[in-house]
Image 1 (cartoon, rainbow, N blue to C red):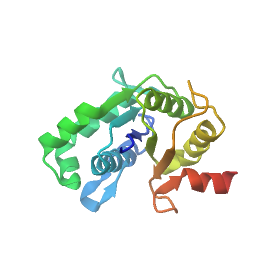
Image 2: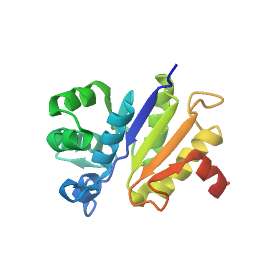
Image 3: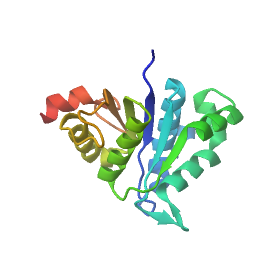
Image 4: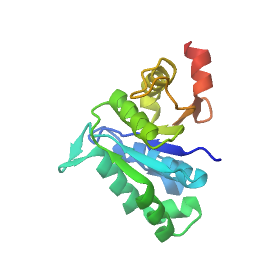
Length: 185
């Protein structure tokens, strides 16, 4: 039986300099931000859950998670092109699998809340798509949760595979749990 998988599209503060380039990129120049990268990965792997984070900042009364999700829907034609499907099909895919995690106020609580949600849904493989500026903190926090039993609600934790997909990473975009164990342990 195939194990269930989730993709966390990590939030990015809405007032941060260069927000659009970090979360969206420039798809005409083949520069993908966290939204296109996360959506394409979720589509390619047929993820069971797509988590959009966070609640750390607001714009016009909307939390980061909602603004990022809406940006993805707004750009559905471009996303469908990079996913190799029709906009309507991709939109239905996103609508049926997306969860806007707007309760968290920082990277730590975003990771914790996402892992809790995954555990409640029996999802054991989690991929976090994250901007390079957040990767070290997210990797450290996720590793602590998975390896040091800080994973909420369960003892021991049941997340079997955690991967951080990092923009501009020297590791070809992937920081795996095994890599973190070797470099941080």
